[in-house]
Image 1 (cartoon, rainbow, N blue to C red):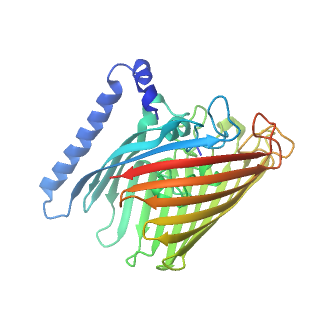
Image 2: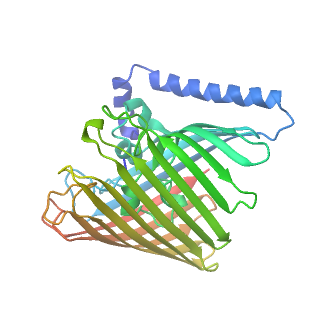
Image 3: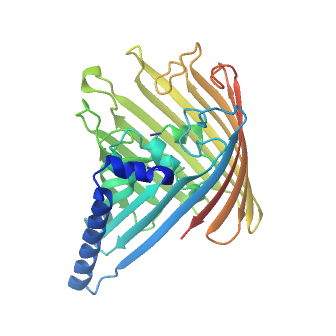
Length: 377
């Protein structure tokens, strides 16, 4: 998967004309507020809601390879700084909910934004969400949404409290966290089946790269046969390479979430992708992942994760080694809820590679510990 740190914010204002970023944010807020009050006044009989929320996650992580540049392995985008206290993700969000219109706008900062949106224009790196939706049917729950939105691929997000583990899996880190485009969604009356069809700017893109002119597409099917089980299939069909390469990326994401009882839960996922590699030949990468979580008491959980990522032909992740990117990972996580909105997490994690890709290509293994504190309002 592909912000600004607090410490770099003043440098950012030097690059962007003075107050331009703040003026743009203010204008967007004013526009959303104006739309909200106009709709509320015009159709007072409809249920409306205008709410603000926020999220902040601080972390300290130690990589036992002790990298001098303080950057943890290149395939990670969350909690990626070594031996320093930092902000992974912090955002403020405004949401508008109306019977016929909905909208979200959020601005963010943190090392997640700095690394994951590095390919985007400077001003767009601070946008977490910016979308507007219109209801298309009076009788059915069908919506058309457009803008910058959370990804339809995978069961993990950049928001730590939405995930079972403190860090993200390798497959989550190397598939989209966000997307930009238009989508049509439909939910049935029982609210146990969800469908979405999307036209996108690309593979985790706000702005299309130079030379890429073809749109990308996606589908999602989410089914809950009962209250304990969720089944999901999502895909991506498109390109992230210039038109001259004539590459067509296809990606399939499968996962199931099963909450056996109040104590035990399990998630199983499998992703597989196909695209042209550096030799201009089509090849595959794939990644299975399993998570098991157990409730210790009303305030705490433990979670175990086992995962594997194989990209032998280095289609997605380049290592310049004989066997490419082939890594097995294990992690053990402990969560403690201080309050309903505050969460403390501790995690130990190990990566085991077939080739020596860690510590300047000297080691096969990598070990880290992570401590995170998050607050959600």
